[in-house]
Image (tube, rainbow, N blue to C red; front, side, top):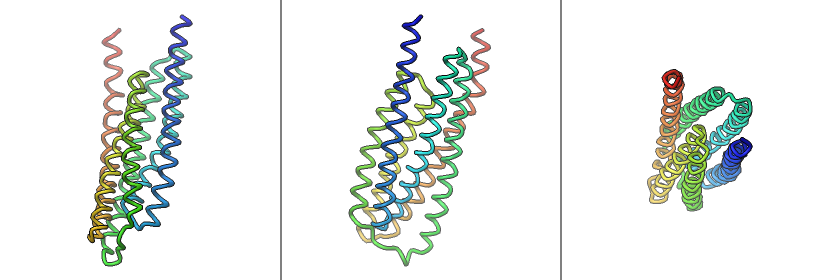
Length: 223
């Protein structure tokens, strides 16, 4: 019995550690993206930095949900644990949708001012490539922990990190286009990133809703 309890505690500690690593990495990347994006005149990198800022808020929700879930487990209330994870996933999805729509709206406004667009500096490309590598590594790490701990909210967090790597790739393409002389490409990349963020939030929310309705049916069948 104590062995089972100890094993459960090890899983909880691993989940907390993964979430904390995500917080630290996202804080560093967000600072780098926003500062360099602003200095290098890259709307795409700035949009990706805003995305990472949303990641930080989402990471905070993940940590809160994991803490509540751990309390629920200690009280032998697994159904409460699942409920907390569903609520956390829904909150993350709403945050992503709002962030994506704001980013899209802002970038489209900038596209209208194409004449005032400045060429992006090469430093923005270096940061974008670094973010791609860092986010992909974070995805693989969190997903491995999510599989060990069977945490649905860590799975959501992992796929969120993968979407970040893809958005950073789009930002890098936009930056390359701007450096090649097509300044508007960086702003279009920011618009695409906004759409991606909103779409990821919608898909995550739809899955959370589906799981919340499917779970009672499966539990009833099991009884």
